[in-house]
Image 1 (cartoon, rainbow, N blue to C red):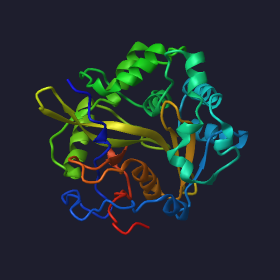
Image 2 (cartoon, helix red, strand yellow; image 1 turned 30 degrees about the vertical axis):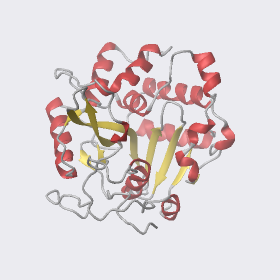
Image 3 (cartoon, rainbow, N blue to C red; image 1 turned 180 degrees about the vertical axis):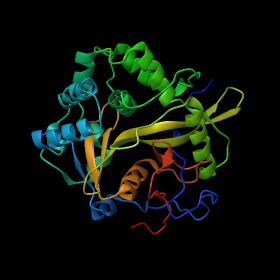
Image 4 (tube, rainbow, N blue to C red; image 1 turned 60 degrees about the horizontal axis):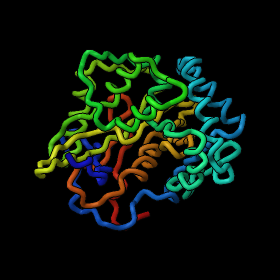
Length: 317
C-alpha cells in the first residue's frame, strides 16, 4: 500500500451566502496569488499572541475556566506550552500582548531547535493540534466508543502519545480521541456540500455531542487519496488541523491552536468567524487544480459562519 498522497491538503465547504444545495464551482479558479493574503488578514484586524507573556496567559486562563475546561486539562496544556517554548527562539515570536498577524504565520517551524529537541526528548515528537484540542476538550465532549474507529491517519499522533513522558490520556480517552478524529470514507466527487454532509452524518453516527456555549472545536477537513499497488484509489476525509474557538463578550473570536509538532502554540484574535475562516483557508486552501474537493471548516458539527475559499479570486487582493 502506498502512503496517502500529501497533495491531499484540499477540499471545501459552503459559504455563508450559498445554500447547501449549491455546489462550489471552481471552474474559474486560477493558479495565481490567493485572494486571502496576510495583508488582507491584517486589514480584517487579525492579531495574534504566542502566550509568552503573563497578560496573555492570564486572559486565556480566564477564558478556558469560563468555558468549563478542567484544571487538569488546563495544566496538561500549560505544561506543554512551557516545554514547547523552551525549544523555540522567542525572538521570532510575539512576546507581549497581541500584534497584527504577519508573514511568520507560515514559517514558525524555522524557530524550533530540532537538534536539541531530538537530543533531549529522544523519540518523543511532541504534541500537535489534535492532541492539544482533545486534551483540553475531553471533559466537555461526549464521545461514545461503541463504533469502530477509523484511525489510520492518526499514526503520528498515536506514536506521540505512546512515547510521551507524561502519559496524558487514559485508555478510554485514547479511544475517544480516535473516535473524534476518525477519517470518513468519501467519493472522488469535488462537491463540497456532499463532503460536509458525509462528515456530519459520520459524527452523528458516532454519537459525538459538542458543548453548546463558551467553547467549540474548529476542524479543517481535507480530502485525501490513498492509492494501492494496483493503482486503486481510496478517497477519504480527515481532520488536517483543529483548534478551540472561544467567543469574547464583545463578539471577538479567539482561536487557540498548536500549529504542528514543531511549531508553537498561539492564540489568534478575530473580529468575527469569517476572519477566522479566512485565516485557516489562507493556510490550507493552497492547491489549485487538484483532483479533490477543497478544504472546508466545521465548528463543532456545523459549517463555520462566513466560510469562503482562498483561491476564488484570480486577481488576488
